[in-house]
Image (cartoon, rainbow, N blue to C red; front, side, top):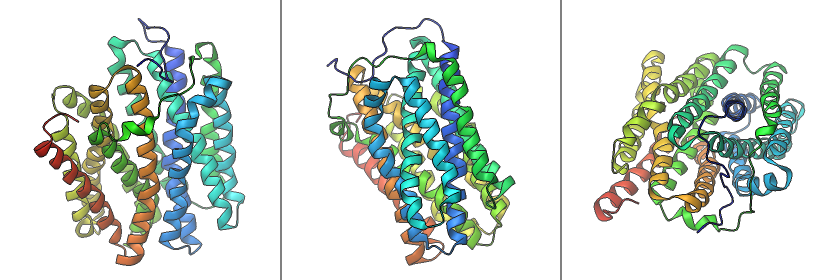
Length: 394
């Protein structure tokens, strides 16, 4: 098959740095916006007396937006160009980020979430596509390593900014909107490197969800845990005795784990013929850490150390899952599967916050940990089942 929506028209021999810098800038804005925005908005709703279930429901709008935006992003970019679409997405994301401050009614936060996360998803998809066009095949691992590390740095920087400036006033919203807007500068400067999308999408990407279930399930679990954790961990930390700043710093430790372990995990995965045991190991570490969290949460330093390694392992589900997908599929099959991969990530973002929020309302504060353990246990069961009963690498 050769009718893929994402095509790399020219094989690069050298890294095209303007394009790479532009794409990495956009992905940095994505990381910081999510890392700052999710805990900030949840804490504000908590202060307003909104229930955990409703906070989770509002956070889950991120998944709804991403599920809609992911398959539409390449179609929009084909009509408007990648650069134009990315700049418009940046404007939409920054305006909606600032809009949260002025929106007093809770119902207004739902369309704002959809616009914000829809724009962020388009930036995410097109940045990844642009990075691939900027990377020569022989150095793609290096370029994607830079991409993954920078994205993780953004996720870590968001909670750090939040821990410093807090949730009061308009300042955190101005900073978030400003960071997003700054990403437009290198994108506009690199507009001559604008990557082409030759044909509109015409492959039904949903069928790829079940073609490599170990990979797509991994990103589903990652999306659920990451989105639900970022949204509701500040609430969980606050209810278990930590200050707003201490909770944000714990979130930063999870992000720091992503940064430190991303490249080593990728190197280990490259040396393995079958990556499913590694994915199962990461899910088991996530399960063990979740079950231990209620017993560790009252010791900030111990919790921080555990979350450092826990966060790195959880991020490995995304990194190794994507590598496993690339190992199984190639060409247009891989392009279509990537769309399904993003869709499953978005589905996780939809299910995770709501499940964790309801669990906290039903089972008390530690329902946060039990819900996380539930997600990891599902994936451990899936991977063990496929390794034992399905020896083929899928």
